[in-house]
Image (tube, rainbow, N blue to C red; front, side, top):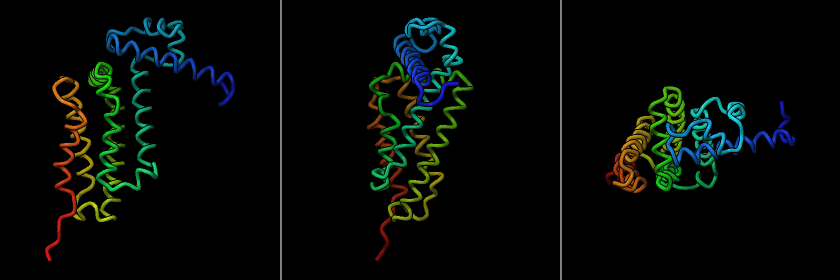
Length: 205
């Protein structure tokens, strides 16, 4: 086993990254179904056997993509700069990060979403990531209650589930017709409506 930080470990990670990048290139060009493992290996300049040394399948590449996105979101959620923002701005910043890059790469996004819908393994992994994001958003809303920025009687668990449900529904809809509307503004418009229900209400004099 390569020692972390050793030349062997660095070479291992560089080759893994090369295969990963090659797979995403072909997914953009051919879709997930159209990109064969042999073609991915050729794009990366390695043998098919080498591909399997790093990923068990094309699904493994997509799972890696999902993990990397999740890590970026979790890092953002714990960023002190984000914690300093008002609750609504924090929520919107997280949602922006969730759709970041999707509209710039609609072909890749379509390919990934359709592959996830057709694979129980990928779907289970995505569901787990959505549950984690739901808990992160719930914690932000809970902190917002302590600040007086979220209604005290708001069920933060339900509100965070609604936020994720809006994101998932709009993403699926956008995936099937990416040119019909802009995803981020539509998502934020839905959040605006939801926020009216969870924002603190003026108290009578």
